[in-house]
Amino acid sequence: MSTQTCLYCKETLKGRSDKKFCNAQCKSAYHNQAESTSEAFIRSVNKQLRANRSALKKACPQGKATVRKDFLKTLGMDFKHLTHTWKSTGGNLYYFCYDYGYTPSVDPEKVVIIQHQNYMQ
Ligand SMILES: [Zn+2]
Image (cartoon, rainbow, N blue to C red; front, side, top):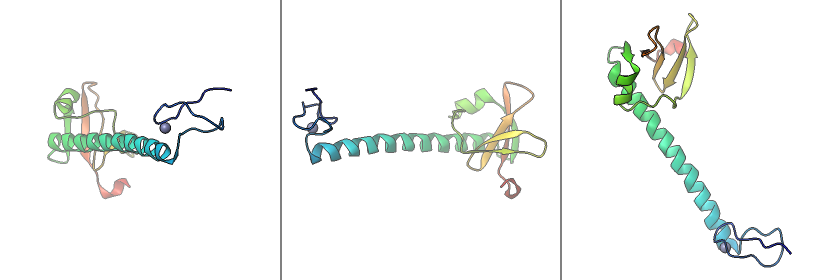
């Protein structure tokens, strides 16, 4: 007989070998915990996306700007997070955080920031 432990409280389980929890309380506590872990992750990603959008907006008050990536980082930008991409007719791929996006500049240290326009759907 194999010894299984409760996925929530780690107590040794007695009885059926396919049991995963001691009881309904442990089962629901476990699922609530898993849910709150993924909610916390979603919140942290949302927070970073907003921070990115805010950094792009600050660095680009006129609707279009070429700025150093380092400058965006000092404003709180994290380049890993984006909401969507958009390809211009010229073939440039823009990485958006909500209504602000950027594309690599010819200078590898810089990016070109643009503000979302209706034709970019
Ligand atoms: Zn348990």
